[in-house]
Amino acid sequence: MKTIKYQDLSDYYEAQIKKGILKTGDKMPSLRQIRSEKKISMTTAQMVYSVLESKDLIVSKPKSGYIVCSPYNHKIQLPEATNPLQKAENSRPEDAAINVYDTIDQKHIVQLSLGIPATSFLPVAALNKCIKNAVNTIDYCGVQYDPIEGNSRLRQQIAKRTLHWNGSITLEDVITTSGCIPALSYCLQSITQPGDTIAVESPVYFGILQLAKHLRLKVVELSTHPQTGINLDSLEKLLKKQEIATLVIVSNFSNPLGYCMPDDKKEKLVQLMTQYNIPLIEDDIYGDLYFGEKRPANCKTFDKEGMVLLCNSISKSLAPGYRVGWILPGKYKDKVIKTKAIQQISDTAITHQAVALYLESGKYEKHLRKLRQDLYVNYVKVTKAILEYFPDETRCTQPQGGLFLWVELDKSINAFTLYKKALQKNIAIMPGIAFSLQDQYTHCIRLSYASEWNDDVEKAIKELGILIHSMSYVK
Ligand SMILES: Cc1ncc(COP(=O)(O)O)c(C=O)c1O
Image (cartoon, rainbow, N blue to C red; front, side, top):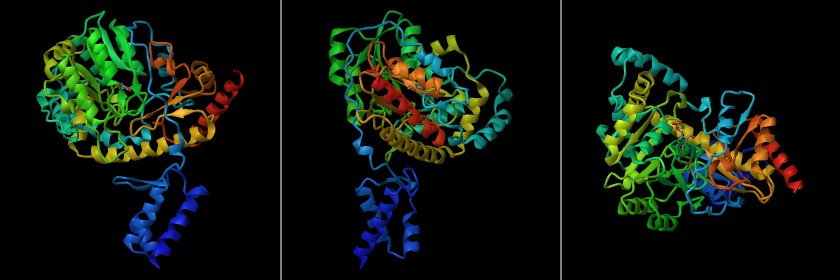
């Protein structure tokens, strides 16, 4: 009797999903709900969902229950590992990156470009309260400079959060900054000289290329796998043949590839950098935005000698406009403090105090759980729309967290032309050329799934698909 019931019920839900009555991203009723509504035992309810899970029709999200997922996910072909030339470059990143910031405040543009979480995903009311309380709780109402290392209550909270990746960091190991880009900038300035060469992943976040250009650093791009990150053999070959001042990587849910470097690879990477005595700048800005069971470690977790300078901020998870970031500089602390003292002296005292109060309130974890679920649902919906509207040969990454998809189109498509055509239709995307100094990724785009999903977003992806199809015709 039981067996018939669970099969009937799983067939029923399967039909609802296939007919689109239960849509991708919808939350399934909880196990308790179906147990009482359908008058079945908990074991039967669990069996129903495990059948649906085994068919990739639903996924279990920790603390959020079960969510309908795209049955097509596994059909997407991944891009292959990249293969850039291993030579030091010191030319441009394309101006495309700058142009895309121009659309930041244009509300009529559908934003598939920037990695900024939708305001509706952020705890605005709670943060407003913290801003008010900040004025009342900070010395001199926040009109004076903070100490150079930063607000000590905030540093304490940042140190405490490192327990999530098995860090054993104290307040003394933390220097605050006005965001992650300043953090990367201070680190680069502290350990490089103009003319030095740095190594990066490829494709690489354009902000790192822009910093390198600004600081007159040459850049070597490394072969990178869309799921596991840089190729360590290529890196070792490079370290043997050439002087490298530092390696900069985004180890978790990288921008743009979305890869998450496996923990054992992170450990090997730290060992390699330590062996060659070369500092590693790690940007972990997406580490808290995981879709899986738990937060991944980072390279800093395995850093015994202080070789890793870890950069991070709240820009992707809490409030990009507050400009709150930090560095765990390892043994380069004195140099980084000197650089910050020259460049900035103090962060914005009010917002740093407000974030300290927010973290002290204990609400951050709950907010992150909700944010991760919102982002996961967006990721599934955007991926499904790509499958529906883009040409069949399209390849796309399958990130396990973060904010981006890297989409590889047919080689004949010029993604920069696509970017310009899309902008004329009020759709912002990032063309692949912004992510390399070499002539590669001309047929790739980066799409962000950080904006709230709605009909306009779906229409925009459909429109992109039409543009791509029309450009394929013009071969
Ligand atoms: C990898 C990476 N690092 C840093 C930043 C910038 O961070 P912030 O706004 O905190 O300066 C971004 C923003 O897109 C990013 O993707």
